[in-house]
Length: 149
Length: 276
Image (tube, rainbow over all chains, first blue to last red; front, side):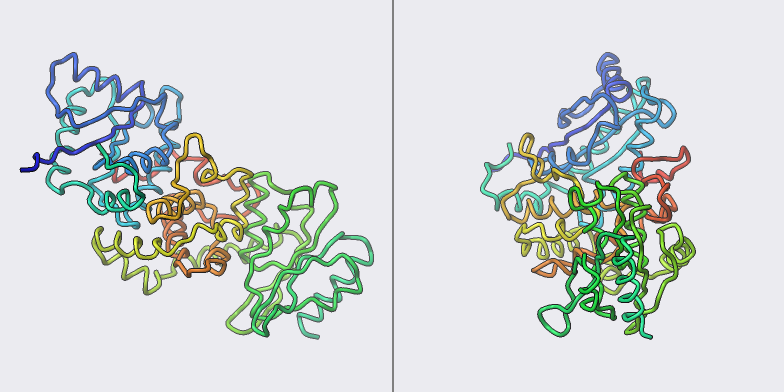
């Protein structure tokens, strides 16, 4: 019998808000699924769309990109630039047939530990429901690279 | 006098007077229905210049040949509205000075070529504005509408089929006047963002990355689609992106040479309906 499906989710977060929010979730002893792997970056402005494609290329079933609320960026406007990029990239991914549930974007502040925990639970459940990203995994398999862990 | 003759004599005069050092235009191609770019430096050669409804290629990209404009001299180019917008974007991105580009403007309306009056890119702002308005009202073509109606898995399968044919020749990149990076992200190997072998995965990544990098910059000249040896409908991706930036940011690329690039600027009230 095969093991039950555990989604692999990569979260790209900015260090000043969402990472601190995740930290708060931890220190507040809030429970959230361990399916998420967090990658901490200086700012959402540093999160290139290439990162999202790379995560999918390495077999992720879902990706979360998150940072400071508009107006709260530590670097003043990094998240405004990021937002434009996401708008365009999100529409491109959907046009290419990547389901909406697979790549999510959010604003989570350093005070929103609860929102972080809830969002991770929600995303994990969504992806558990739709299952592994078989279509993408088939493309990965075709390249002959080792199966994603 | 036909427009072809008119521009031939203009090109001849410009070269003879030394006002421009080169004329970039169209000449007969290898078959009767083909046109090819020519680079003319002698007034006597101007009789080779052709202008008709088959002259579809956007010639603006040739101006970016390394060192071509570095002597400060002018070059005359045959350009349609898309071409003029290309010049505006390239000037906004500091890739050339629009003062060095003498424009021989034309517009193709079905099978007819019409003159567009103006010498410099700034002279065409009215025509560009009219194009923007027309673009806003333009309905998606049949295939695009069909795609939009599909669900995600069907769309993925569609693109998988299209991109499985891609041979990673990068003709789209070579033909694109906007792809001027000296080192493309796909040539980067540390880290290697995009799989370079021509598997469908790498092909998908490459085409998505290119579409993203052209978002808010593409003028929809169609050079990439014409260059593609396996007929991938690249225009669908680019059109989707153009529509998106137009709708979300009211950004139409190449309005003038001072226009800020869509993805290098922002407004505090940009839409964000999809962000949780």
